[in-house]
Length: 330
Image (cartoon, rainbow, N blue to C red; front, side):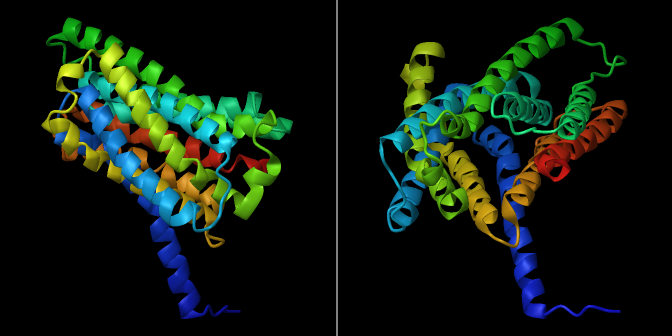
């Protein structure tokens, strides 16, 4: 028996799916855009936060306030705090890109975030409630780790400059570890502060959580800018060049990232998509970053590395999709 679907409904579904893919395209392009814009890691971080600030204030004035979403001190606390740690994550990621390249740094960063966020959700937030969820979750994490290992593999046949490559690799991985910790706290803070009672369930649940997540965007952007200034001035020691041309060019990077953020919220709130599918689709940004770095930025990989990168990327994406849908196995 054939089931006929209304063409208008199918058009709406197709449009919704396309919108849900915007975060993957936007977030996967951040490393590509900031590399093209140039500048130091400090200039890239600061410029990106300026772009994010424009998006954050626009969200606050044109969506949050007109919809009368709650903007009390709790929202400002979680927003500014998560913005500060986001700046740590972003600066670390941009520093890693300098040493590892986009096609290596972003996939490893994504894999690290998937693993740490999953473990935080399971252990700290208590989201994995059954043995089946734990078993499937652990297997998925192992798949992501194996995928990341394959993506980062070097071709032993290419031994020229191996010592300097090893030093660069080590330094890049240290930056990625710092970045992953920053992003982990950025992602977990909104839910953790709800779990311990600082953010009430009433505030968090309003309008399926969209009001809460959009309300923190403005304060978060302010925290991002403050964090970026502190890192650029006191950690990277780049106060003398933080307002040079590359900083302003990297506002575009922040606008690209902000686009991903907004469409993530829109997709999560759309009944045709929902939070689970929206989150899953967003993980596909690893494909954009990996192959964009190789084919658009010309980052060199051997045939051996390309085979491992393709297998590794598939493992990371599959692991991320399963983790994103972990509640289906409750």
